[in-house]
Structures are given as structure tokens and as C-alpha cells.
Image (cartoon, rainbow, N blue to C red; front, side):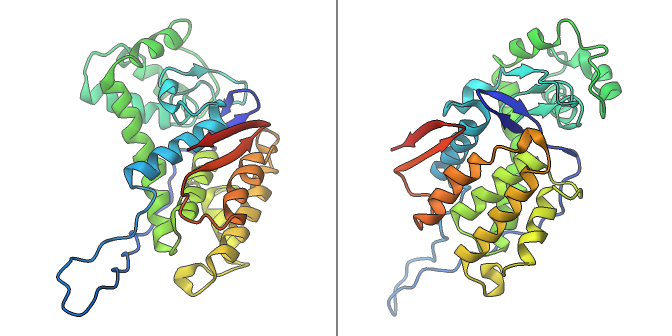
Length: 278
């Protein structure tokens, strides 16, 4: 999903094809004094509940001009980007397959729900911008479904399965701390995990051509600058992505401040809007 100024959305291309990402990097135990009996404690990652909440707010600031990411379960519109309807907390799209996966999951968990009747149409329009079989009532029914906690949980679970978990796993394998894990997550949300030149995987490969990851013995800040440079290049390849402030005045600010663990307070700007997490 890609944000356009003032609250509009654009989804990631090639959403269904997700990178085969590696297992999470095993955390290094904390040092203890001789004879200490305390068990090793893993370093906090983006999957820590408090850090994950920060990540959801950071993405929502770019995608929805709001820190209230839970208000987006009901969001749905066609923004005219060729991907059909864009909806929900992560920009599930009727034309790119991830909306179909979500509604299938919802139907499996709650048969006969208000969206189940649209499954044949969603299968038919996958890969297109068509609304055939969806109009006129699909948006209203989506908003009705969004009041259901079962549907809300399905959105959370698909977000994690397709985007959050693979991104965090790969970032941990690369030896990145919380900011780097978030940079990977934000990139896969916008660009998808396919194999095209602007996908997350291609962005990472472009960065690796310029710098080593910490897991390879490289400097973390140097590598993250290379990754963000590659991300900006990818964003500029498509007009809908061309405003790079979610990198320039957000992630790059945290990196310049040396805040590799995304420790609050956090202050940033996206598309001219300023945000704060205390």
C-alpha cells in the first residue's frame, strides 16, 4: 500500500508473491556475571508488542495521515491506480490478490459472513481493476464487516503473515535492530515482496551491492543508509510513490539521530504533517 498526500492510499504491486525470507536471527544473550543463574534474554525487536504498536502508528501516519491505525479497518475506496479497491489497515487490494486471501480467511473463520458472497467476484477480478460483481454494495458491506472483531483479527493476521513477519524475520537475519526491521516492513508494505525491479527483494539486493549487513560484518548505519537510498530510488520509479518524505523526514531522521531501537519520544513528518509519539 502506498500513500498519496492527504490520506489517499496506493497498494503494493505484485502483492501475492512474497519473498522466501530466512529464519529470524538468534539474539545474542546478555552478559552475566560468573555463576549467575538468570536465563539469557533476547534483544527487543519490532515484534515486541510496544515496538509493534509504534510500527503500526508510523505506517498509519504515512498511509492515513493519522496515528489511529485501528480506525482503518473500515477504510475502502478505489483510488484510480489500476488495482481496484484498496481497503483495510494495510491496503488490501481487489486487483492484487491479498484482498481475496483476506476474505477467504474471513469466510473460513466465519462462514456466511457479509463478504462471503463476493468471493466469486473477487476471484474473477483478481489481477484487474474491475469492479464487476462487487458494485454497488461491496464498499458498504466491507464497512459493515469491519465492525466485526473476527474480520478485524483476520486483517491483523494477514498483515502479519504477508508483510510484518517476513520483513522482521529477514531484518533479524541481516542483524538489524528495531529501526532496520521497521525500514524493511515499511518497504514491503509499499512495494510488495515480488521479483520486479522495485520490489522489496530488489531494493534489498540494490543495498547489498553497496554495503554489508551487520550479519555480514558491516556497519548498521552504513547499510541502512544504503537501503534507504535504494528505497528512495524505487519510490521514484512510479509517480504514485514519488513523494519520499516517509523516508526523508521520518526514517532518515531516526537514523541520523542514532535511534536504532526506535526509542520514544519520536518526532517526524510525512507529507507535511507532523507527528509525535511520547
